[in-house]
Length: 199
Ligand code: FES
Image 1: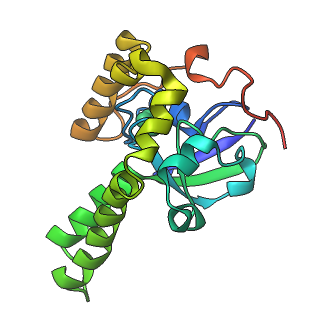
Image 2 (image 1 turned 90 degrees about the horizontal axis):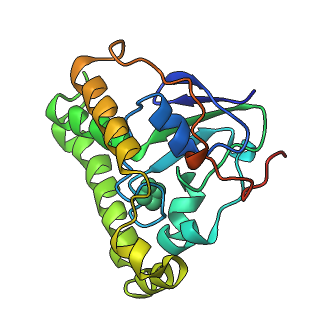
């Protein structure tokens, strides 16, 4: 069984499961405004280790992420699915930005706020550049791929969307131990065999 170490926490995972699904099941700090439709990029993760255990970069990711960002190991959590049995180490963009911001507010010993502001701002600028850098063709391609209805209303399971959002928020506010990991199968968040299942 593959494993994912996300935001420094080890999580169980299933072959074929996207990183976003793993994160949502475990209430990890991750964004998913478009519910995995490939529209928002809020599920972006930096893959620290085990990139070869993931499915290849998709057209959706190429649509949003500049090559430099891909080269730095960033993937979209809703697109990158587990295809190998090794461990993948990842840091979500939401958590990465949160940690960078905390370092600006309270710089680690030996550094100043100016030191820690630099990587934070570089990350924020790159995130925004992702969206506006190839405008409007990225949006047109997504519109063509998803159709107008899914483009306007991308959430496919509002109940699950709200439950996961609340669980993640609760966990953020109350700490690591207050949210129970859901063990039930959630096939709607799997890739249904669209991604390569095994390396
Ligand atoms: S959840 Fe929106 S792009 Fe992945």
